[in-house]
Length: 187
Image 1: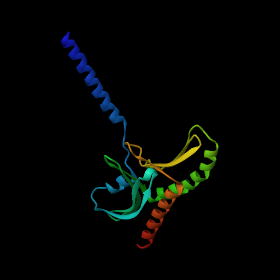
Image 2 (image 1 turned 90 degrees about the vertical axis):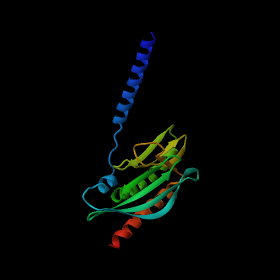
Image 3 (image 1 turned 180 degrees about the vertical axis):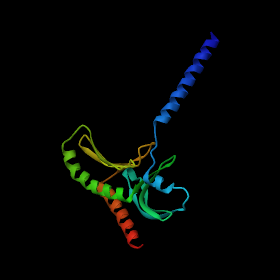
Image 4 (image 1 turned 90 degrees about the horizontal axis):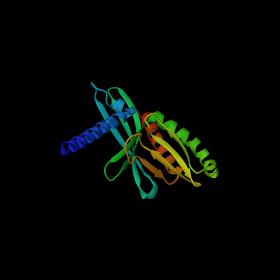
């Protein structure tokens, strides 16, 4: 009887481990544009960061921002990085320059829709834009109240930040765009 109980416990344990391994395999990490660009082999890769003003978040939290110039061989790309520190780690969004332009354009559309979405008083509504790398910018409305948010990537935990007002993110995105354009004109 004792042997049968041990066998059953071992079977359940191994089955649980096998399922856990299978679940981990199901979650696929897609390579971001910055990771793909910066991981080219056989060339020299240089990262140059330029600090930007911190991004003020909900509940007095802060995200650090910077523009990153990545040079791989003779190629050059710019990214806007937003990094939030948490208790256990940090989460970073890396938005490629052309995606940044699209985010800015779509933010204007989201802003124009937010007031009417709040006025419709839905039980719940979410409106967002997602870049090819999984960065999300949008808002949700619940019980007539709206809140803007950014989700840095599709994977992990603690990767969503909330913003008090849309102007805060708008100013930050435009500052990054202007910095990148200033840098490209100096070359």
